[in-house]
Structure formats: C-alpha cells, structure tokens
Length: 389
Image (cartoon, rainbow, N blue to C red):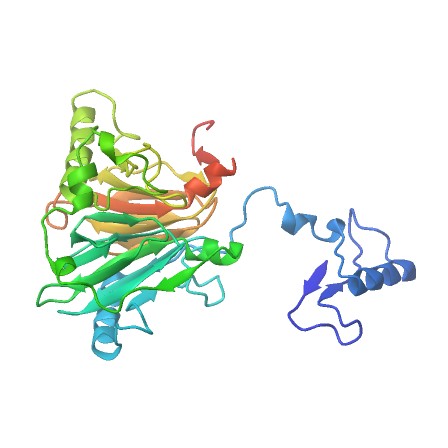
C-alpha cells in the first residue's frame, strides 16, 4: 500500500509514503521491512509490489465517471454569460467547459477530451489566436456565426461539423442579430497531461474581407467534392483541409444506410443503427490526429448492443430522444444533451425518437473520442456484448 501527497512527510521530507501491510503476495511485516521502506522513501523510490494492482489492473479503470449535462441548462447559463462576460482579448472565448465530476474540478470532460459550449452575441468577434490543441466545432442549433480559419470565412449552421487542426490561426464573428451557441471539442487534457501545448495570440481584429459571409468557404470549394482530390493542392498539413462537413451530406448518408438495410442489403452497424465517420479527404484517415468524430442514427425502437472500448468519448444528442446506459448509469436524453463514456464502460442506447421530436424520425447522436491516439499506440480494444470481438 502506498500513500502519495503533495506535501512531504515531516519525518522524511519525501512525498513518497509507504506502509507495510500483511496481505497475500506481500512480504512479511518486520522491523527490517519498515526500515527498507523508509530507505525507499528517502530516495524517492516506489516498489512495484505495493502498486501493481493500481498500475496494472486486469482492465482499464477510468478516472472519469459517466455523466450527463442537460442542453437546456447549458444554453440558459451560456445566455446569462453572454450578458455578463466579455468575449474580447483576455477572456478570449466565451467557452464554458464540461467538468467531469470525478476529475477533481478540472475543466475536462474525460482525461483526454475537452468539451465546451461557446456563445457569441450579435455582432461580436472572438479574436484571432492559434494553439497546438486540435479542435472542432459542432452546431446543434442556429446559424449566423462564421469561423475564420487561415483567413478563410466558413459558415456554421445546424448539423455542421467544422474541424480545425492545431496551430491554425482562427477567429469567429457573429454576422446576425441573434446570439448563437455551439459545442467545441479539443484534446486539451491530453496535451496538458503530455506537456506538449503551445498558444499564441493573433490579430485583435479580422479584416473586412474576412467579414464576408460566403455560402461556401475556399476550403469547401477546393476539397468538398466527394471522391475527388485536387491535383494541384499537394499534401496539406496534419488534419483535414476541408473545414466544414455539411449536415445535408451527413443526413443523406445516414438515411441511405437505413434504406439499404430495409431493402435487405448491408450498410448499417447493426439492425436499425446507421453510422458515418468524418474523414480527411486527402488521406481517408481521421479528420484530426487525436480526435475521431462520427454521427450515429438509431431508428425508433432499435437498441444498440452494449459496447466497451478503450479510450473515452463525448456524445451530444443532435436530434430525437431515447434512453442511454453508460456503465451503471441510465438517462433519458433529448436534443442537445451531452454525456461522457469513460474508457471500458459499456454503452448501450435505445431510440424512442419519432416525428414529433426528430427531423429524421430517429435518434441522432454526434460522437467524438480519442481513438486515433489509442490506435497509434496499438492500445485500441473493443468488445461488443454477445460477440468474440
């Protein structure tokens, strides 16, 4: 057994504290063992036999907990912040992060993922900056804000997914008379823990040309043609060069999968469960080096098989309603609600959506997770209940 604290032990001056315990697999508790442990403490050493159960468990034991945030409450609090909190340089963004209740008050949704609601009032600008953290925006309601990435204005509308790889200059501006809210996802906790992050301020104001509101950004005009790669573009940097994945394309792809299933052909993940993954048109890989993003559509009455995965995810209900079970927690969910799925916690979903609460008549879930990190390290593992995978 080991105790670690931030303050050093008054007797040894060491933050390492070891206590000999009588237990199977542990050495006999003797004065000599106590003396040995005091020597370990003085030299800042921790023997594996006191820690193996925590360091090498039989399966992942996430520090995070399953948790649900209600969109209605988030939206209400963000609107109040819009009245009270400036968005200019200093505060930088009116972004309100989800704090997982098991992570000690840190603004982290999971040990690797940040999720926040961002709110921009009419006519406001969020000033330009850049950071090494990979990011995206996903819009569950509204339109009227343009994100400007590398001086390219990109429209943000309901259902749109807008990735932005790290170290790209970006700003936002609200060109309408209405406020707008969306969610941000970043790998801030991962880069914070790995001590790899950089941040830099950009211009305080964007140019008149960047305040234009084109229907399609330059990135979409170059890269947004299915199955076609521009020959002259060369290889862009890490992350997708396509800055917006529009809802109409996502919606059609999900509809087509369910229609093919109804016709007796393949295409769905499981009965009544369609899913698409956003990919980099230059590589066909994930849109961001550290984040995977998907949309799942679950037909009314369908229920997904419980799935466990290494790594964590955050989900937002885009449309519809249903029941979600993560580990031992079960919630009813509706449009906008967000919830976390920690590593190796089983997830299952039942759709109760219909024509009255969903444009598609199904439960639509946006999901982002840290799978690219785990796959790069060969640590990705998935288990679907009732299978041998």
